[in-house]
Amino acid sequence: MKKQNAAHAHASEDKAARRTTILQAAKTLFSRGSGSLPTAAEIALEAGLAKGTVYLYFRTKEEIFAALLLEGWGAVMEEGQVLFQTTTGNRAVKVAAFLTALVAHLEKHSELLRLDALGYGVLERNMPHDVLVAHKAEYTARLERTGSAIDSALRLSAGRGVELLMRTYALTRGLWQSYQDAEASHLPHVARRAANPFARELREALTEYWHGALASPASSANGSDVV
Image (cartoon, rainbow, N blue to C red; front, side):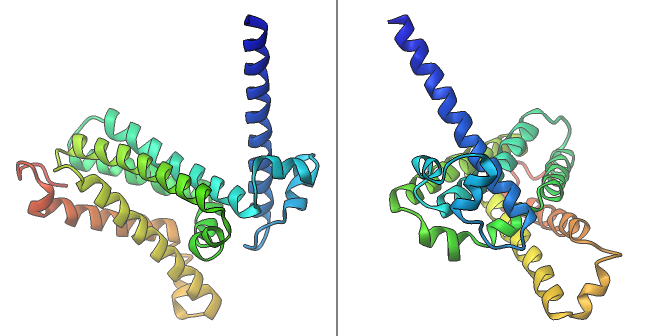
């Protein structure tokens, strides 16, 4: 029995490692590219695997990139959860720690927002329904865990943390898209990028949003500790 359990554990580890290899290969190719999704054959070649092996783990290439998207935003939320649970100080200090970490993560992983832009129009429309449902359930679970940590750390009413996170995501995605549109159409806005790049603009916009949101009566449990 022990030998069987050991063999099963070893097989599970091998399977997890191979899945990680596929995801890393896909991430590398997407980061190098211009925004389109690499093919399953290209991912297999980069991973050093047969194309058929890739399909043993993922039914479509879109499923691979949806997993990367979940992994990327999941890392943001997990880091946020830890920060809100461990950072000491008032609301302003805790929020600043989270926003600094968020912007730093997006700067380090610049492919995340490019991939996110493909979410609904490309990825979701080409994923098996059961996989899509599972991905959304996992994303929601992570969102709610981080939201609960925010509620507790900032003494907010239940569910307010999730609202703050959802609006933070919307602001982040919208601001990033506005920069892409400006670059594509050569609008004068582009000239401002050297003096006020996306990261700085995002940090300012999110700080202003959280400041205003937490100053509202709906976000203050006792009204005495706003950002």
